[in-house]
Length: 481
Image (cartoon, rainbow, N blue to C red; front, side):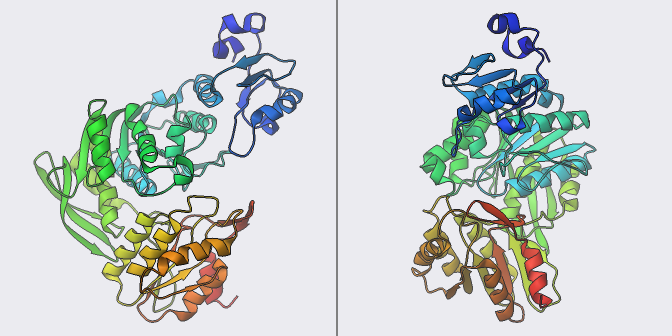
């Protein structure tokens, strides 16, 4: 692509014939003919690496601050906005070539995207998914260089969109984090449908207040044609009242105040079933994921599909065919008389949801093993301890991803909340040892919840990632290895 197609002839003047071969924000990825964008990150500043980018062959450098290099520099006020705009232009605005659905909220994003995928595939569409677990188009897993856990950075996002467009995607369903909305990762994207699941405490290390967190989530509905919002959630009701004039809204919930609502809910170990009502029609729905929160996820997914014009019978079949999602109420097959469940619950609301769900079908004790991530919102630690103590029969407080924090300090902060209850618990800082303790002390009909890691197959200690798959850890211990 010619440089003037990205930057405009007036700015480049004599450089209009410069050939742009790629874009990078990491100087190590720069090759001959690339644009290097200096991003001010949380741990380092890309401006420090401008010289390295020039050495590696950068044809143009985009910067906010003055830099001393011998290639053209395009100065901007916000390099995050700039890289999003450049990526959209470089890849030809690929998201215009398919329907785009964005799912935001604290909990339920991943499950909801997979439920939407199942419905749309039942409707005969080729569907892509971008999110926490993986990026896929049909049965093909796509690999990016992104280190962002939920929503890729703007550059990788447009790369994924381009690959999905080339694979003839009819629709792409993606998780949209509050960080993505606040940090311009989805700039240049226009969503056919935006979905809001719920809002509970998380990410206050970044957003500082719940109001800021909610406002970040609500930005999705400024860039969506239609919206699906859970109005049983207090923040959902507020967002619906604020954004109703900006996009067409379908509300969901468990009362007839909502446009799509459910009643007669039944939860078992095998899943959930309920009666759904929409536009005067009613139907009996089933999903293979237990929990009241799963009903909300199913309503959000159904609402998104309905807003795209999918008929309600196809929605019903799609939900029935949906399989469980890795790391979400995932039962680990074991030849034992107790049950082991892995769940990604890492927020107060998520932990309460999974414990309450398991208590609805557990014949024995509910044993909850959990921790909290280091270098993240520490105000939720005692809250999660109190929730586990209140609703579990026994809790094991351990490490999650301690990162650069002292894991013993994190565990002690969780325990402060546990002490506010009568809950029985033990602290075992090493997560591998904690899992072994849970397995060794489980009794017939007990259910062990391994909460917090979900689909992750690693543990972050310091700044290093170590292999740690809880499924593997369970099997190794049961096999005596």
